[in-house]
Length: 134
Image 1 (cartoon, one colour):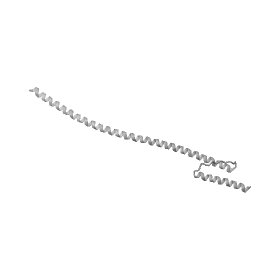
Image 2 (image 1 turned 90 degrees about the vertical axis):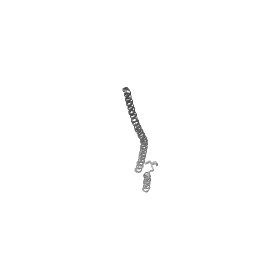
Image 3 (image 1 turned 120 degrees about the vertical axis):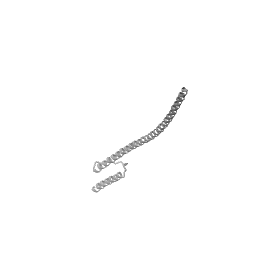
Image 4 (image 1 turned 135 degrees about the horizontal axis):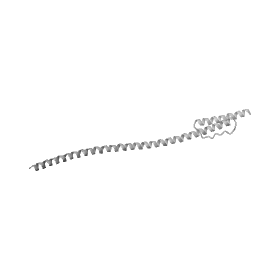
């Protein structure tokens, strides 16, 4: 009877050992149930709870990782949009600079034309003055 009991205990310990080796390798698929109320049964129940806790933790981490990936994708899209906006602002600023330079050139040309008109008016005034003095 003692040999049979010892053999049963050793068999359960080996089974628990194999389950633990599977968990270490990442196999969380096996259903672990502690059927008996003795120490090995309680150990198997605890091992099953540990496996379920690890599975739940991994699921939580996967969910958080997915959420982080989504936030990262959103940030990436926002950064791309910001970069495009910055490029457009740069183009618009360059256009404004060109238009300002063109306007300044046109103002200078208008100023030169106005100066010529003033000279022409002064010349006409001088001729009128000469005609009046005759």
